[in-house]
Length: 484
Image (cartoon, rainbow, N blue to C red; front, side, top):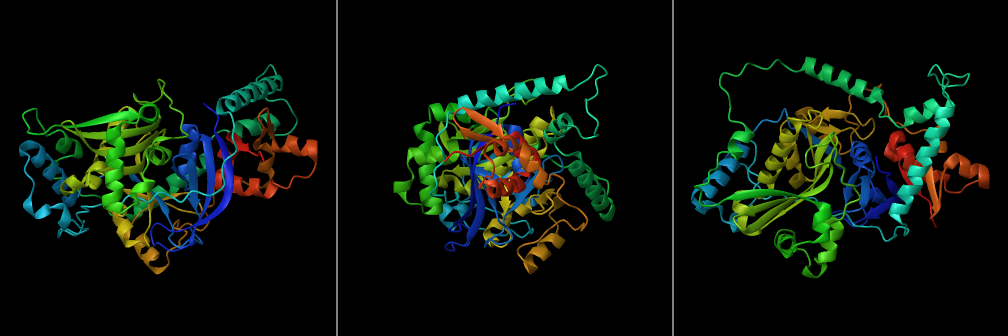
């Protein structure tokens, strides 16, 4: 596993992209030079989200528009009438090339088509977060990774000397140094057990499902109902972000500019190639490919939608050990009549379902943030089998009408109804000693060793805050850049 290297920026205040309030959006931010896909999966399961190399976590208890991480279980996902209508519209257009006259782009709006699902003809993407003024320290990422690997080797060697011939860890206590190292690098099983208990309780409270009388048409059925004789051919191409970064095509940049100007009324002067690369191409995730990964591997990708020879949409996604995470989606406004925002989400769910056929553990589709206090951003909650992340216990809770009613009453909620549940990955005072610090280009050392060398350290509070936010697992695995 590659080393994750981050620099924590602390609390940030900026303009809100949802309510457009000034200096009211509160979050924590950090720059990620490098993130292993396992560590980023841990981070998004604690409410973090990335935009380029910048990672941020909303301070939901104080921010103007609380943002709850939302995911969909792709294996339990069910198509709505609205979803099927959009899929049929796309298939009809591909088959004969005709557009429905009542659905010109100038008539597009977020409407309800009578079935209660909503047509979601234009889906607003999450705005790019405002980046902090603070610039990250300049480091040689490859060299730091070499330092981390050397340190890991030394630790393994030290541990091997503590193991006796019978295979047991040497030492009188039940919690030896070596066992602490082992436990800190593994995901907490207590969290999984609590999640399973919660899901069992919820299953008991739900009425039993009635058996299906007829087999409904699946998402895959809709997506494969095209033929070579169709007037138009839609091709979905998956491209690794590293390949795009080396040769970002003019077509991708032109499409991004057109989308931002027409849909978001963005300033054309800001939509440079470098700004697009910073937000949507550059990624701290290291591409990971082995026998234990999907065929395309883990990492950051673009799903390009080619209609004949024309690029009409791009979905920016991260493929992680437990999920496909949607980063951003942009499309050609001339094709808004095809509801490409919703269609893209359905395509990404299909990608999860395809990967899960080989890797059942990768079955979730992460949609970013659900912002209940912003009406136009509630559309994500319309996908079936959706869950929200509790901002206090980091346990997933089904998005039900009861949860929506609670959020109607007060925009910040704990969400997890079990009062006794706590954060199983909690970072507490004694865990700070094992945080790995990068002090300069040549020195990577634990916090405990560093303090033993220099005495008191004024940066301890920031490290504690960082550890509480990323959790014990990531706080011990990731390298904390502490360079002035």
